[in-house]
Image (cartoon, rainbow, N blue to C red; front, side, top):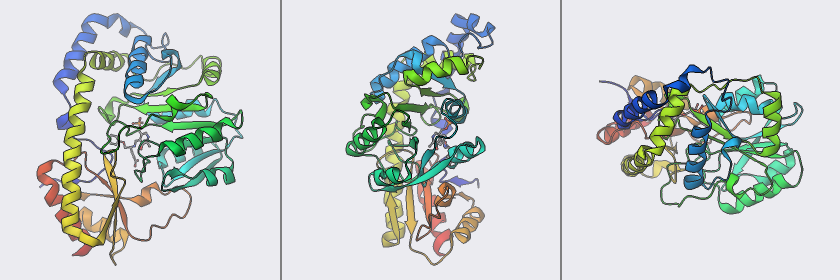
Length: 366
Ligand SMILES: Cc1ncc(COP(=O)(O)O)c(/C=N/[C@@H](CCC(=O)O)COc2ccccc2)c1O
């Protein structure tokens, strides 16, 4: 039997409309193959019509307010973060949420960027802690805090924007990753759309909504940073390949994107509800679940004598892919009192939910 997966890093590829994607790729190749005879130096920020489509999509789905000129495409969030790092003076301190996204933390360290981590409270990143640390740039995931799942309420968003407005060199990096899938709570407008001081740098990606392998991500710069980018990085070439760009545009403009997100939302909502019910039945009072309002994963904390490592080893023996919260501990010695795991359900078909929960029970209690 194959592995079952609670991974938050994979999606159920069987649900992707490859037929429609292929149609769009075919169209793109037929109608716009002249675009392919260029090494992307002509559109360093990405093809203009593609950025127009993305700007329109984001204004409808996320309340983003931007011109296509402010968008820079990149093959992954990390390459875009490297470019952004090059726009900010080197002595400026960046602050990340703790627990948080270790791939960004480690990238910034490699870039010799001074990085601090900031604790969370029930509403997300702590403003009091930000003021104590006094960084210039704060990296937040307000839609569905990674990995705790906290949805930052509007009050905290306003506080954060006010903090940024107090000084000229302050910025907020809003990583709106995982924003497509909301349950129960209605979508809260993103920081970028609420920002009247041009302090928010918006990051987004198609890794979760479409396929991680496409490697199409984007960042939206406020004008003052865009000007610096255009001079300092005028030599850089676009890193997303042209065929993927024009296929994506076709996929969005023909309505397939909207249709896909709608159907994935229903499928993921069903899986999430069934998984949570199955876990409550299996684990009862021994389990504490949080961060279920959005995204494709939640956290589960267990009352058990068994150690985290012992559980992870047993899960691997049971062929159950499982990740612990420890992978998101950046700097602080963030001791979760009890073993806590990131429970992803995007790659867990309905039929295997009960078995996956059973294997998890064995790994923790048998
Ligand atoms: C906070 C955050 N922001 C952005 C991204 C996306 O990066 P991009 O693909 O380069 O644009 C990730 C991906 N995080 C990845 C790893 C998390 C981890 O290491 O624990 C998980 O990514 C996926 C999850 C499900 C389906 C597809 C992808 C991010 O965790």
